[in-house]
Length: 490
Image 1 (spheres, rainbow, N blue to C red):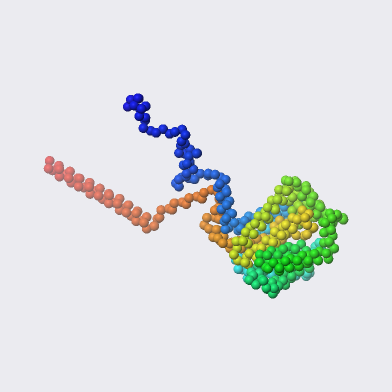
Image 2: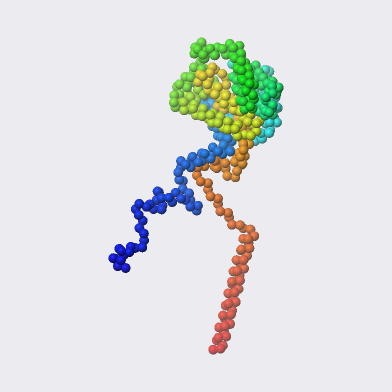
């Protein structure tokens, strides 16, 4: 073909227009197509993270794992801050600076054992044991009025057993929550009748709150009142009875406050902002610690209030030490953990299909969250001083043990959510399946079977090989005889 013919007819290959992109160009339609036999690229990380988080939030096991993670974080924060807030005073007493951590860590280890034991129990066990647990809680609370009882700061709410102090009211909270769950779940269809509302719920609640109040512990009684209110609300008690119960409870709290000169003195100081002597020392030093912390805090372990300035720095006012050392960011982090715990527990109430578990979770939620926010409001000056610890964080064995046991009960209930048991016990770990943002690995190809068929194939191969050698010898024999016959003919 001459040059002129080539120019006239072309080369036979259609040129690609500069305007049309290549098939594998980023703007082409086939650029994002991934064949099944090809390894998938990472792709859009934001989309994968969004899809992974969305799938994680929809997982039936979210509440179960959420309780574990949040509880571990709260206990970890508590151990860290107890070490920080007690080290100086322990050294000044001639003890080890880690004495507070060792003591609280021992209670945390015992609480972990209680948590595991409570988590493995089925919900039916708690429903059957509700009445015995309530009786045991009331019996322990009665011990504070025996020679075993200890009085501190005007409150008689502790028991000395084996050289250790125990606060029975903390365990009475858990018993009351489970007892109300079992009782109200049984009477739920009959709650519109006065007789079923009043008996036996009212005598049991009055006995529990009354024993605590006889020990002059108004803060614990208020927490238990919130526990009862949360249980009644989720149980669906008629509105008129709920309002009557709330009014009577409020009247009782006001009456107990007015009849106590110590409480009235605290309230007057809180309302007017005036102090006489050391009556406002704890509240003022707590606010000063929060103010000194600023945005980012003075640094972990660098608090000045824990050097004897702030009373109960490791107990009721540990939130002030958190604000001083970790700043506003640290306090908001603790607040976020309790908010996340609230979301998990509220989600459990809506997902569980058993009234007993719903009401029990509501009572435990009102207890833990109500006590936490009461403590924070006291430290920040939004309420007068009320002696309630910060759950999971404040120093103290009874409060930590009761809180971790309650967390174990919640874990037992979370496993009974629809689809949760299957998600938790699935062959592929539920955590990897729910939070992974990468494609799941392809299943490995099954190994060839080594059963009867494999042995059959091996026998056939050996037979074929043997037959092949035999036929070869036969062919060689025929060729030799034919050669000899040809030679004789010649």
